[in-house]
Each structure stands twice: as C-alpha cells, then as structure tokens.
Image 1 (cartoon, rainbow, N blue to C red):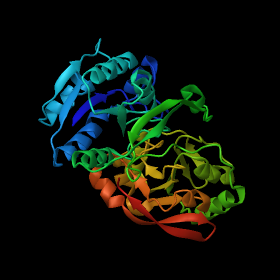
Image 2: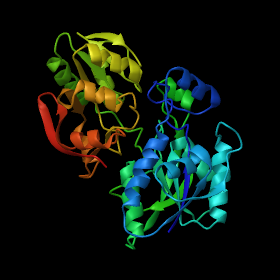
Image 3: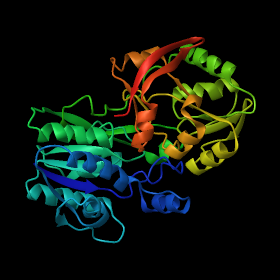
Image 4: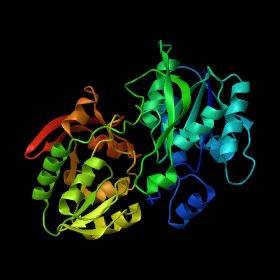
Length: 371
C-alpha cells in the first residue's frame, strides 16, 4: 500500500493558549509568543509507530522536513520525498501542492495531519476519487474526515494492510469563521466532501450543532454540580453550552468556547490558557467539569486543548466531572465516549465506566474509551 503523508506543523498551535484556532500568520505568531507549541509531529509518530507494528507492507511518500520526512526519519521509516515547502514557514499552498504531487505518484490513500483548515486545503486539491484520512491535530474539528485519534487512524490503515474489505464513504469538510468563534458564535460552513475509509468505530462524526437546548435538563445539571461544589476548590469549567449552564446558574460571565475558572461561586479567570490552568492546579485543590462534544463524544481532545495531559494529571482523574443531557448521550447510539489527550498512557488511565451527571441527583454510567 502506498501512503501519501502530509503534516501541517502549525495545526493546533493556538489551542493550548486559548486562541480558538491557528489560522493565519498573525495567530501563529501570537500563539508562539504565548508559549504555544505544535504537537503534530508527536501525534503523527503515534499513528505511524502503531502502523509500523502491523503486518503487511507499505510505502510512504511524503513532503520534505516537518511536513512529513522528518517524522519518518525519527521513526526510522523509509520514505520517498515528492514535494518541498516553498519557505521556512509552511503555508496552505504547500499543503495543496503536496496533495497534487502525491496524487501524481498514484498513492492509495492520503494521510494528512491537521485540523479543519488543513482539511479544507486538502479538499481543494484532491481529485474526486482519492481516498484520504485525517489525523486530528487541530483546534477546530468539525469535519467528518478525521479518525477519532492517531491510534484509531493506525487501526483503520491496519485493516487495509491486512487485506480486509474496507468500504469508503463521503465525509463532509466543514470549517468555521475563526473570528466569530472567538466571539462565542459558531458558524460552521460546508466546503465539500472527500472519500474516507468507512470504519465508523474509529472515524469521527461531523460535529452536531444548532440543536434545540433542553433548558430544564441543563438547569437540573447545573443545580447538581453547584450543590456539590466544595469551598476553596477551583473549578475548571470546560467549553460547551452544557457547561455554560453552570456559569449562567451562578450568575457569572464566562466564555462559551473556552475554559473558565470558578472558586466559591465567583469567577476567578475567564478563557484560561493551559499554562494558567497548570499553575492553578499546582497550587490549589482543583476540579474539572467537562461535557462530551455533541455528535462526536469526545470528553478531552476536541475544543478543550487547554486541558493538557499535564493539567489533567495535576488535577487527578478523581476530580473530573462529566455532564451531559440524556438526549446527547442517546444520540451517540450506544457508541462510547472518547478521550484523546495525546498521552496514550493517560488515555488508558481515563478509559472505563464513568458516572455522567444527567440531571439533579440523576446520573448514568457510560463507557469511555481511549480511541
């Protein structure tokens, strides 16, 4: 099997520093100034490292430097370089040019690493019947062309390497207005479709949005969480409309799409960065409150990259509360919730049966998996 590899080394760099995206040179520069670091190479290594252990032979065709070749070299994987970035900082055009070059070489599948912006770039350059698969590395993850995690991407490719019949389906490419996103307005736009392997156990669904809010259920969930809040404990309230109901019930302002810090019913910090959360967790008793992303089921790893492995470990798994309406869980159609922190060992620790708060003194046990 001939795999074409394209990595966007700038994808996700704005997530841990609460920038809600990584598009544009100015955003990248600001992210770096705030201490943002790319984890793309690390996540691609997880995928290729797992794939390397699969039976079956494969070739990798890729792009020079950080866009692919350097990652392969670090894993001692042979690769053929078929494209080169045009400058020292990669651009969307470098991605599009790489996709065209890989297709000219007749690759069986294009494996790309990035977020929705990268998916858009691939979609613009890909031919109508080319099969692709995304390794999730971005901040905005609304498209249905990504595997659930780097490990899941390797499992999909492993099925293909093993010669098993793997169907393909059309996955939507969606992206949002990043500036509006920073103002707590989600405007997801359809940009096209690409063919992806139809392994639904490992493939991310399109993020659902625009559904009617179940006001009463949210009020009951918020009441349960607030009643259980302990004095002198800092609560890290994650992103989402479900968690936002807690701030609303407390009567404090907050960010719908970031992480807020609350202590003794008062707002300490809004839209916190990963470094700020780590500092709080190192000096205080802290608790994390998160909700699954509707339609996808991710608890960590989508839209809340401020919860880095370091922050989660410092807080402790016993100090994490998951909240959700029952309708959101029912929409999962018995699929498990997912953790994808980028730390495989931590993901395994977090996997298992979790208590999910679904109302006032009402909860369900729900399975959480690491891929």
